[in-house]
Length: 271
Ligand SMILES: Nc1ncnc2c1ncn2[C@@H]1O[C@H](COP(=O)(O)OP(=O)(O)OP(=O)(O)O)[C@@H](O)[C@H]1O
Ligand SMILES: [Mg+2]
Image (cartoon, rainbow, N blue to C red; front, side, top):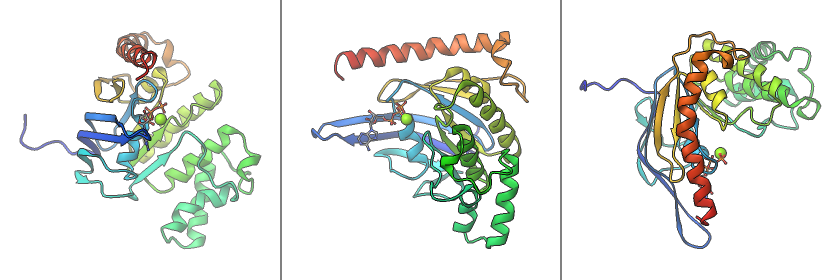
């Protein structure tokens, strides 16, 4: 191994995260967790429900501290919430009382950008995510897919160098989901952020990512990491029928199924 490690945008080394349950037991969510994401890399993470995926994102976002090991951003320890990190949640995290423009402007205003500059940039992002004409609609007047677009604009406007996404499209219907996946890939190709994208959907992980990490059932460890050497740009509507895609999906799904079955077995035994 070379003495100089390659730079990473995000790294978790030997990380442990444990919770004390209401009954006083210790619940171990992550143990010996190692994962590294290069600058500009798109990493997807799949694993059984409840294994510790959201917990992992929370550590990187600086919302919680690990009990063991180290979490770094660009090779410096995470000490709290960091402006270089953007977070897109599974549920809508838009402000319901603000219109689309107000939502998209929120980040720059918070960072102290002058109002007219923030507004001009926000209008530009609203066009890029296909919401022109909806600047003064409020979230309840938008469809689920449109609210996701607001969330993407709201995040990308801050130029995150690291983008954490927690099952962002799982509540959408299949067609809207495909559109959003395509839009995300286009935005990412321009922004060049490092992405950590959590999903239950293995096809989605393969369609989007440079590498897919499969987590074990709790306590989560990285079971395997698969390089997805499908060319870009990718056509998310047709790629899943490509035989290279199918071969990759078959290989990873064996790994994932094993863990999902283990998780079910543990549940059935009351763990
Ligand atoms: N604040 C907390 N206090 C106690 N236990 C917690 C806390 N946060 C998470 N856990 C536990 O840690 C484990 C991992 O939770 P996490 O939300 O990371 O799972 P996940 O992989 O994101 O699941 P899903 O796929 O269902 O979203 C779960 O057993 C959960 O109950
Ligand atoms: Mg989760």
